[in-house]
Image 1 (cartoon, rainbow, N blue to C red):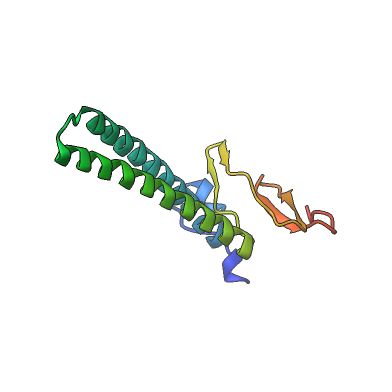
Image 2 (cartoon, rainbow, N blue to C red):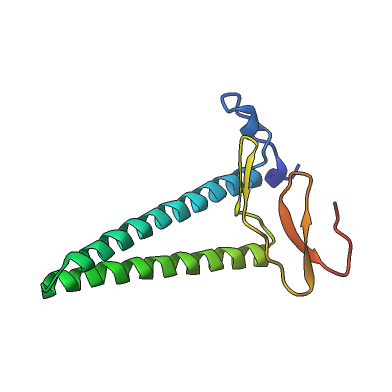
Length: 142
């Protein structure tokens, strides 16, 4: 039996985890961690940007306060830029390895990041609702 496709057989785990293979479990964990990281990064950007902007506005003529506020705003924008780069790298990894780690399934509530395929590919959806890229010349396997 292929160990990658073996079901998780721990009686202490919930049925939603027992029915997953090892690969599906890791995919689910990665999806949750990556999404949580994006949410935390977005909240941190918003907080830093707003506090930096308020500090900049209220700095008056104080050069030190003005420079500190300017630094805070530029660091927030740099952090947002880094989040965009990470998002692009994750999408590149999904395309290269044909995996879908940007889908979250939380008890029936699904959040899906739209799948981006190459010019000679199209998006197909499997029985679980996960999307993947498939050559455009051939029909989807599902």
